[in-house]
Image 1 (cartoon, rainbow, N blue to C red):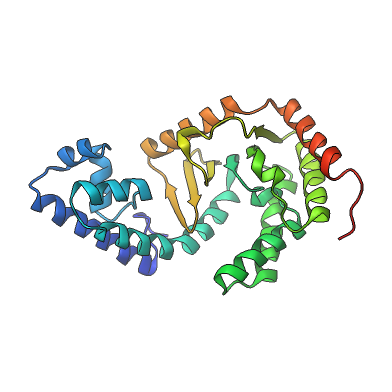
Image 2: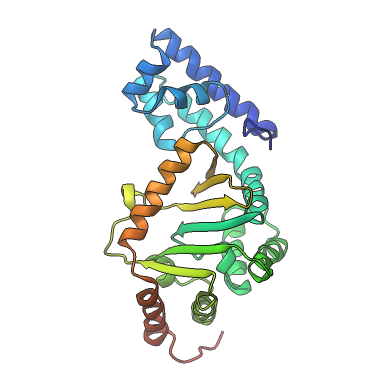
Length: 280
């Protein structure tokens, strides 16, 4: 991945988005600052978009399209760039994850580092049935290999906020879910791993309904943010963006159950739904 955040053909689509954005802005005789006020975002972010160094979120892309009267053109280019960037960014995230000293995580599915083999297999199998082109067993192997970072002599500190729906949604059947929930309790007993549950009665900050967020502090002190939503993803390295995602995480954490209560919540789910070891 280059310093600009572009990867192969995705960079071309991302650059195309930036060039088209600049032409539309200039056609409307708007400065970057003036356009930013209409969205609203900072002038610096507009500059990043136009220089092809950053791809906006879907909401920002739609707002830019609306403000500039682009008739969905910017949204279409954004969709192409986002789909091309997803696999490359996911791979880059996995590399960064292996170098992290601290990992803060929020998701409405069980995070990859905490998934059992059968849970991961069920997730990838469902993805392959819907989209095709996924080598399920290879992906399961890669995911299990990633988890070895938790067993290293100096593992990263992991603090994960789990949306309650991630614990209640049945993936792979009752037997798989029982084992998965027990695995969370086992991992949570380690001194460097903490889970908190965000109750369903608590809204997700910002009104988001589907998102995966990871905040990484690398061993060299750098901070990164990685976000997935649907088939798109983004990697943030600027202080401004990381701070924005950190604010989201802080709000989610403030609404989550404390660690001890979260542990009891997971135990209660097992007792309520998976008390007896079910047959596969």
